Image 1 (cartoon, rainbow, N blue to C red):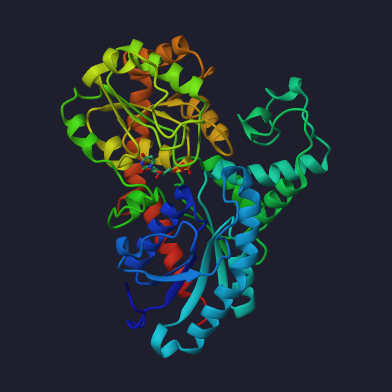
Image 2: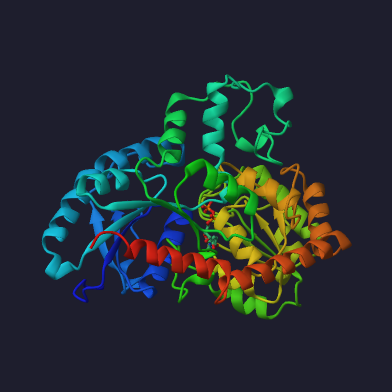
Length: 455
Ligand code: UDP
């Protein structure tokens, strides 16, 4: 683990402790470390990152009082509230001590917190240092919470069924359905409070986004107008980070790489629903038969406990394994970035988490979109209707629909056209992350900005 004796200026990172948030925060840490800063990762004990994967960082565990707390998916809002309340004082105390002890620790110059971890901002205010917000979602989705709050004040909710497919004012191609808020319900108060807390920047001096100017200039320009603070688009982070160390909570099963080596170019469909989504046993069964009947090779990530009522894949239908034989490979967790970069992979059946999308676009892999919750619906809408590099799975518990979608993506002309568009996007992303590209320029602006904070 790093010590802070090297007297570089330090940035303090406060990640939200879930895979899709901690990964980009640690990537940002690597980017800033290679930009000349010491990096302090202030993290909960719950879902703590592994310091051994990042010897260049200084890790600061925060007492979160979450042991014994219900941290199940259904209780997420309560977990968020608890972390924000419980970690504030420990972070403040530790940083105050470090700031007194500057000789030893170097100068702490700012806090960068996940948008959900807003206690980072109040600690920064208290210690009289600057804070920046990291948005780990798309530029489009950064606008969704303010939009919902605005519409709530105009009494749009509860939404009637007939409204769900209408476009949301000001959000381009997004429909009300893509908010992932069911029809005919009032938005619960704790959810509204979460939207407020997460989208209110308070005294933050800037926003960092894991995206690039080229991906969605329209949303970025709207965001700039709305938030009126500097916006730094320095993504995709995994391409900007100097090394690609793993931050996976689950052990990566690398057996799939040797299996991929044996497959024909662009023949394999890779399936993963990310780190949190779960499905019903019926969907597992229908997906299995859709894959078997498609005739296409596939690499399928099924996380332990991600099928309701199962430990793992015991509910796969009888006869499935014999039907697919060596044509299919199932793992609990894959080295996803490497998988997507493998020449055998030709399509990604995804829940449309933002990291997965960036990782797929950077390798020119088109997608079948099976969004589950939160930003995934809006992301899927963009993939299918704006970038046109994905097709939407309209029904998830129907083997025929799944088989058809696989063929459309993997063998038909429609899929070829999507692959071509994905290749064009990859080219743009490569340009933006290469020297002289927009993400590079934005990073150099960010480094200057942080360096401009009072010494
Ligand atoms: N991931 C992985 N192996 C897997 C499945 C997912 O390494 O088998 C990684 C993936 O590369 C991505 C992250 O987990 O970086 C998932 O983040 P995303 O935003 O896509 O979805 P979330 O898990 O937050 O729903």
